[in-house]
Image 1 (cartoon, one colour):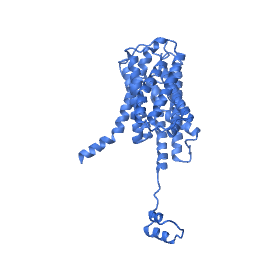
Image 2: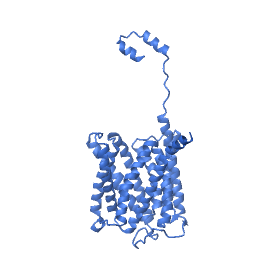
Image 3: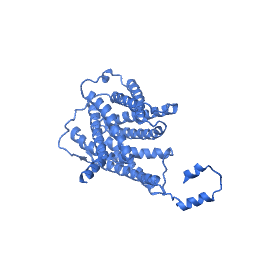
Image 4: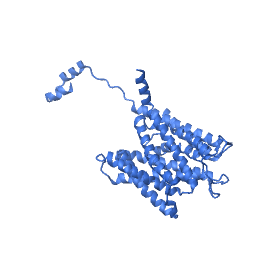
Amino acid sequence: MVCVRICNALYGLKPVLAMFLSHLLSTGLNIIFKLIANDGMSLKVFSAYRVLFASAVMIPLALVFERNKRPKMTWTVLAQIFLCALFGMTLAQNLYLESMIFIPTTFTVAIVNLIPVFTFILAVCFRQEKLGLRSLQGIAKLAGTLVGIGGAMLFVFYKGITINVWHHTGLLAMPQSSTSSSNPHHSNGYALGTVLALLSCLSSSAWLIIQGKLSKTYPCPLSNTALISVMGTVQCVVYALSTERDWSQWKLGWNIRLLGVFYAGILGSGVVVFMTTWCVNMRGPLFVASFSPVLLILVAIFCSLLLGEKLYLGSFLGGFLIICGLYLVIWGKSIEMRKMTRVEPMETPRPSEAQTIEIVSTTPMPIHSTTSRG
């Protein structure tokens, strides 16, 4: 009995361990983003390589596991795939990577926690969510939205004192050029990076809204992801070719650039997406969303330790308010989902009452249909 209980407990911890491992891999991905930016690689080219590697992974999986399950492709589905690739990959990734040039990685990840808040706002605008101010869940979702936006504003406009956690400059810290906008003396870099991160969150929220409709019209997750990756590859490559004139940026070599592209494409867009999808199927989207602050904590620890990033009091306060707003929205949504999935018990007629109904009924019907009802 003790062994059975231990096995059941370990099986129940699988989603928790999967989400922790997923955020640990995502932490490494954010560190690689910063190292590649400091190395001088064009982030537009890096984003194009990333979705290219992701397509190379997802296409064979979709062909093998969903060969005879894909529905017919329509122009509506193709348009939704194009928009998902545009908002979810091209805009969201490029804006996110560009924001990391101007602000520390920890701050960028903290702002990413606003995605559920922006998603709720867009869902209300497109009438996919009801505000419901007369109900507890509606008040919680609105309060979480306002608290999250207030945290983002505090994050942008207030720095405060510098908090030194470690007594060194970072184990993997690399010297940056004097023209880099991430210089602390650059007055507009902090605000610009925050705006880019907020636009990335808004783009990701728009992708979630469109993805919800695409999942209903094209319910094949592997093929869905593969098609979005292919469309995103075309968009990112065209964008990188039109904006990056230095052809040496496309050379990878045996260095941090090749490692970063391989890590981001295979692990970041492959393993992390798979584990996240599995956890959504096991525990639901609210369970996955509730682990967002774990990524912020891991990134804050490892980026300050490895990259020597400075932490400010305003960042802590703003990040705390963003997390509080996130949990208020999740709590309100969980109450709403419990009310929607609550099924009222149906009263079944007693055998004597059923027999009485059959005897009184004078409508002619076949004998086999009468017996089947009993």
